Image 1 (cartoon, rainbow, N blue to C red):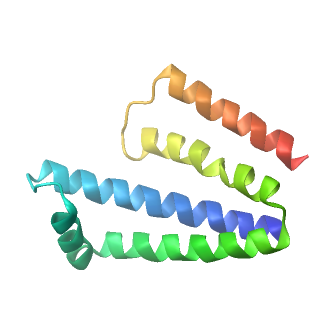
Image 2 (spheres, helix red, strand yellow):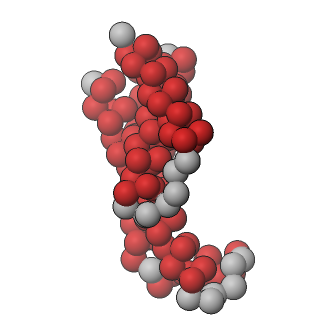
Length: 118
């Protein structure tokens, strides 16, 4: 059960972060002013931002369930898998530049997760 909950946390967090980043970049390139009012308006009219909020809600409750059944010393580091997946997806889906230092950091996080899972 812990692996199912962890998978839900990771997948929904990654989905939410990608959707948020994508939508905020669209807002920035369209010349919209960046600020709280602009973000609130964007949430109201952009379906992807509503989906991102729903995904983060699922992630939050799955994380609560994970922490109920597993030690915090497992749950928090294991959920760091989001950093690794998001780094890869940022490079290939969002076309962001990922330098060697950032890639090395993601690999170190991945190494820690592998050690934790054993």
